Image (cartoon, rainbow, N blue to C red; front, side, top):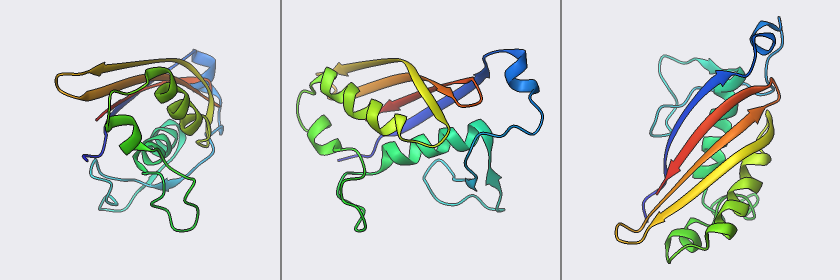
Length: 140
């Protein structure tokens, strides 16, 4: 099974959201490369970039692979191993995304499945606690 690939972008919801001095979305983490390795030279992610990276890491975790808590992660083998139940898939991904630090709410989510290519694509508009809109895409 191939792991999902990710895309993301963000935009300010309003001028007030970007002008709030000293207000940083919770979460600071090492910056990761596209393949999940730590970026060198070392740097930290903060704000919306940290939220996006946190969501990406959570969606990339396969359920059962964390030996400390096997309930964490996404059951990707159940989702992409057959014709996916799109409402169930959206519900699973909503739960994972909503649990990420810095996520206020999920404004919209679209999931499509291409049966010929056996590819699932999901796009979500995520509102951060800084009131910024983060658009993320996941494809298997």
